[in-house]
Image (cartoon, rainbow, N blue to C red):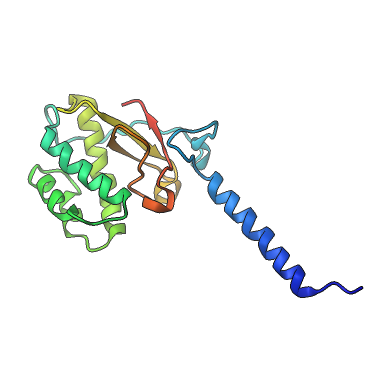
Length: 176
């Protein structure tokens, strides 16, 4: 009996799809913790704290945190709602990257500049604290072609602003 080439092609496609899907799903954790998965393997090194300067010379004000968290949540939700308005508030505080976010017309542009804003916030909170106590530091090693990027978010499950729904839970919490 001769093999049906159509059945073999469909079978091959199913196997290829299953292998691709499992590779993508294994690329990051699902619930904001590592479940034994070493995120450092994505870029070959452990995440180190940046030496970024910060515009904050005292405790980061609650209003500044609120504007930042609005942008973080919107990006995690793949939304631009209110992002420009909140970025303008940050721009008024002199936060680098905020003006570019306010002017960006697409979500990927906002995400690229959000990394700069996040670096300043992380350093500001590390150096001076924040008027709100419910902040956590999160890091995704796969963001920006495996360069990795950090952000602050309120308590809860990882909500990745750099990937949104594509990889919403990619990342892990780190010590702030």
